[in-house]
Amino acid sequence: MRQNLQSGERLRPIDLARGHGLSTQAVRNYEEAGILPAAARTPHGYRTYTPAHAGALRAFLALLPGHGHRTAAAIMRAVNQGAADEAFRLIDESHAQLLDDRRTLRAVEDALRDLGPVAVSGSGPVSGSGPASGSGPASGGTFIGPLADELGIRPATLRKWEDAGLVRPRRDPRTGYRVYDEADVRDVRLAHQLRRGGYPLERIAPLIAHVRAAGGLEPLEATLADWRARLSARGRAMLTGAAELDAYLGGAGAPSAIR
Image (cartoon, rainbow, N blue to C red; front, side, top):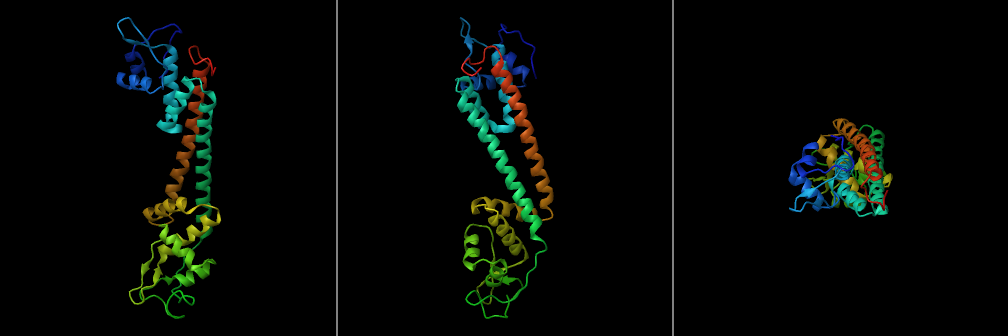
């Protein structure tokens, strides 16, 4: 909540706290963390704040939704220390992360769009990747060889993806070979699409886990829509935070090295 304050007005911790729905301890903590400039003290040792402190608090609270607590606090510390380049670098990093998240979402959406229907052939594997050609798993699914051959990759690549947690095939009780069921094939094909898009295994693994948790690709559509909405909300929050930070930087009492 924006307070209508005069430039020379002196504020108590309770005044700042009430104006933003905070506790007085939170205001003191923010000052000690460098989020607010250091307060003046009365002869009796009580803190007194100014409209500049109120502006700093508004800026910090506005930065929180878009940048998170750690980065928002670091931005305000840099601002209050007069370190403009550091503050702007932190802001740039947050925007770069948001752009990277948008690209990841687009890559996932593109990969899902390119998957098409998932089929499990149950045909035998290529030589050296399972039992003799023409024999399939005892209880359905497909062996590693035919799946690798269908995707144009090596069986060793599928084993590497298994080690990275991207896929978890069961073992055929008759032969001991890896068996990929429909969900496994879906995960492998999604991983294959993302790898073709240049994404490293460590970034693909949590996305595959998300598909499993959603119960497949169709329920994931709602998750993707929510992801997209949250990215948009973050972008809007960054604009709001930038406006409040700019108002603080341009106001009386802000660090002169940044104004």
